[in-house]
Image (cartoon, rainbow, N blue to C red):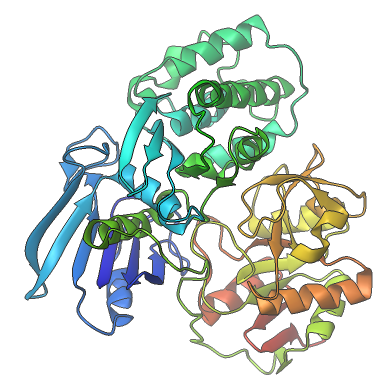
Length: 522
């Protein structure tokens, strides 16, 4: 059975599954398109070109006619897991008879984690979906039937990001306005907090925000001007302290419910955009309430097309199991050549590249198909040596990011315990660990943490070979790893963009497939 699935709205994507195997998951933002982009005609054509035959099922994720979850639904809509959350009807697709399936956006998150996760068929589990609008626990039974257990908190992701907007004088007083990137920035800033007791003015604001319903549409900033944190500035210590306490309060709402009610000893699956919060993921993994915790590499809406495809497979076959690889995107497009008058191009030698990095250079690294989800996992990366704070500063300048944003390390899984603790192994960069050495200054956040990615030769042979070669020179199989993308756009996926990016931002070299490229000496 061939299933072709679409996710409309922001983080648009197209995915295909055939007979229980993921063929691809393509995202609208990738190939230097705007971050969080909606489905485009070009992406649909590229997806269709990858199929060898007409799909048996077209799966359409439920969504809304607009930007906010409360707007009129399309297909099965945004919310729900019970009756009416799944539809199946006969239809046509490009003039041929095809089953047309749809299930809610809420179900897409659940099924992303369930289908990609390690829970054996026939074993029940719990699932937490926390994202911009949904904050609920579920139980999935032996047959894959989903039961909603508890709505814990409305808008957990939107509330988390709202605090950043409230403190930022640049954020306007407009109901419904939001910035997707604020949550990640706030996660970085919580690391700067000075821990202490919750102050009365902090407690008042935290409880007020957590009690809101429909916070984006109903609470413009000017309605919270009574708070001393209104427009206080995101770089103030007062805001950083509050941000950490607000994060603790959101997590506590969910943890307290889980500790009291999720007592069967089942594993926990986590999905939704809050599944990208590495601190919360680490707390779930360490809380000892569950035998294990699984977060997919695409827990946010970038994985929703895939989740709907998995839901369709479950509906028609009774099985949600999918074999998959995180490198499920498109191959790199070589649409231009490196100018031989400006660049030296030679066969890839991992030892030569390792020495080049050890000398302080930055390279754009391109291998295979791009990663699904928002994190660069060694196929569309900027790499650098991890030892100096100056490298951290330079990388953030190249990325046009704020100076407080951390840079992640990539490390051989077999060596990771030597330099990091907590959350290991972590092939999809979803947990915070602690750095155990002072040598890795470029990847150590102010609180001593790092968002580690571990790799094995089986998962990614080329980056593993480079890390091994770098260890031979330096003693450390660790590199800085940040995404290869223009500011505000998805991963670079063609040579012309790569060269333009390197010229604009001062990359020192490139590895594209089996070639190593450096600038000619002046």
